[in-house]
Image 1 (spheres, rainbow, N blue to C red):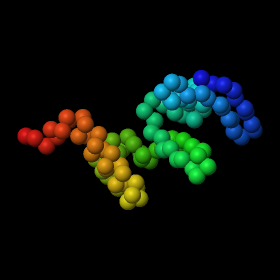
Image 2: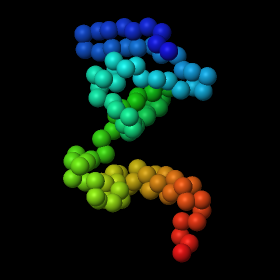
Image 3: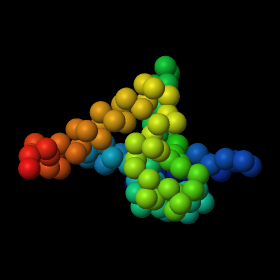
Amino acid sequence: MIITTIERKNSMKIFIATDSRSRLTIPENIRRKSGIKPSTLFSMTLNDDNSIVLKPVKICDNCIADINKPLSDLVMHYPEAERNKAFAALSVDYAKRCGGKCYEN
């Protein structure tokens, strides 16, 4: 739920309340202006002052051309720590999806 909006020359600040599950909805005008579409990937940074920065992330420069490449090829340009986190998260997700029977014949 939007509480109030403050517009400035080069920016817009919107105060939003979270719902009962601590989720928030990015308002439609912001989604439209920033090009956010369903399934847009975001990075979230928690700063030392507890401020949160949420940024849309582009995984590849030419996603249509890259669509047939393995995801591991796309992730290889990440810094090693980020690459390891991505592979770990993908491994856990894969194991959950196949019910722990991923490698059975």
